Length: 323
Image 1 (cartoon, rainbow, N blue to C red):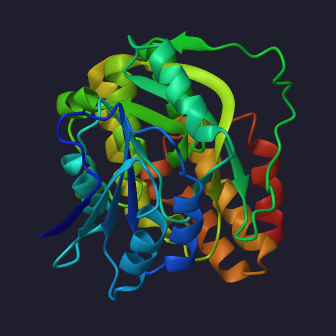
Image 2 (cartoon, rainbow, N blue to C red):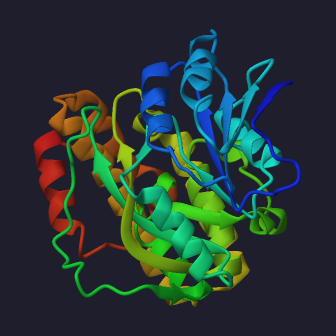
């Protein structure tokens, strides 16, 4: 383990630790770090590096050496899994709150100040969820909601409601939307490498079941969808089996009534399969899209009830792909 400490004030514990796991994407990492510039000294930036060369380290030193905030650089030697790269940052963090921002995502202008403002205004909540803009690699917005946001208010969702939202919408949480008290990680545990790649669903299932969420509609960050992202290759039978196990764990917690749980499960898996199918259809990769649609025919999906919401799209895709 190699850690370089720069501008660390041991007399002042930071309010917020921003953990940036990175892997061989120095140019994207530069964009991420530039979005974190702040005059606050109660913020620390922790870069955990899984790269195979020193290019990311050079970017860190170039950008962060001029920042007044506290920062640390950690090189994984040897390299670790993506989940444990995130865990390395959490373990090094000294802040009361932890925010994980991957090297291909970035904060919007005023995003950091908004996070700090809401943390200070709402000290009683363990999990804060903000809005996120979904963009492509060129920062062009990909999806827009049809729901009006002008009347949305900050709201606390207790565990039952928070879990219902998570388990009925496979894209409900984008990674750069959530800020968590470090003591919450102490309570529910770190990222589970055995549940990769859908370990984000596992983490938020554990968090939401325990603490609920404080939902803040303000958009603070951009989530980048691109071919190099791990999520683009996560729609397969292995991931399906992991997700089913996560749902079974959620069921055993007893937070949701059985009927609501079953409705959530149907909606989640229909959306999860169909959204990925659509992604490969627009890329013109019909072979991969067909393989993903065939997940509906997995024996584990036999008891999945029909989702009225997603049924029309499911029928259209079946017709297009002849499955």
